[in-house]
Amino acid sequence: MIYYFSGTGNSRYVAEQLGKELTEEVAFMSLENAGELRGNSIGLVFPVYSWGVPPIVLDFIAKFPQNLLDEARRRGTPLWAVMTCGDEVALAPEMLEKALEKRGVYSESVWSVIMPNNYVLLPGFDVDPKDVEQEKLKAAPARISEIAEGIRKHRLVVDVTRGKKVWLKTKTVYPLFKKWGISPKRWRSTEACVGCGICARSCPVGNIRMNEETRRPEWGDNCTSCVGCFHSCPRHAVEYGNMTKSKGQYYLKN
Ligand SMILES: Cc1cc2nc3c(=O)[nH]c(=O)nc-3n(C[C@H](O)[C@H](O)[C@H](O)COP(=O)(O)O)c2cc1C
Ligand code: SF4
Ligand code: SF4
Image (cartoon, rainbow, N blue to C red; front, side):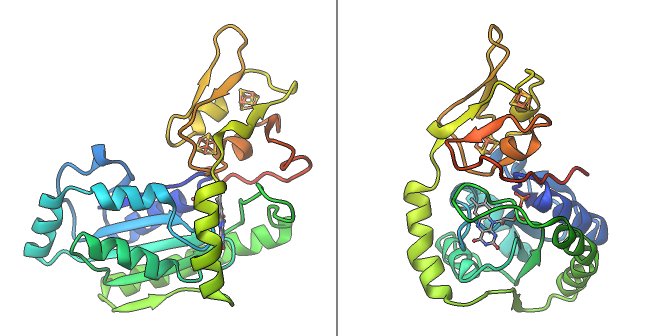
């Protein structure tokens, strides 16, 4: 069984491709989908956030039913993880391992796949130029097949692109992101909004409701900072304070 979390479609795409190659069922990372142990392995596929594991993924791991983990251990069902990233993951695999260790399990393998960048919420961060985006999408299928092969062969590896200054990024910047980087209050829609509701439907945690009177989206307090609402809007009418003015959009529909 492959569990994925995804804001703009990259990790969902990777999970679905791996699902086909490994003939594993694919499901959104929610405890509702963790009722029984199915398939040959437990796979986790998610984006890297600020050189770490998204808090929502850490929460899923912390709450994953203990009876299923015990059953997996008894059966020898391996656990593996794939992180999608725009560039690099730094020490995110170690952060994942710590979270798994707390539940008494470990990963057989951890991999990364470089995919188009979606982070736009700070100055200096934007989506990739179109040619870079296309190159990354072109390279992804071969990387996914390589990972599937590694998982099938039960390779014991951490095969990721880490980048430089990994300690600083994961140990210093990630905690700041966790504390200050997820701010639901700053989301808003502009006059360009036509009330289509796509942003609300794209939110993976159901944090956006459409106001029936104004026909405009309203954001709740449960934001994970996945940026799905920003990138999915066909009118480019979602803004995050003044941070996203003139930033590009990217959303992988599959
Ligand atoms: C909050 C946030 C933080 C991010 N931090 C990183 C990062 O540290 N390193 C990186 O390479 N990409 C980073 N990204 C880019 C995403 O990891 C990348 O685009 C990913 O494939 C998105 O997956 P998704 O479409 O499944 O949400 C970040 C994206 C977001 C939304
Ligand atoms: S997706 Fe854009 S246009 Fe549609 S409701 Fe949301 S903000 Fe408005
Ligand atoms: S409200 Fe937050 S969690 Fe929902 S789509 Fe927007 S950024 Fe993602």
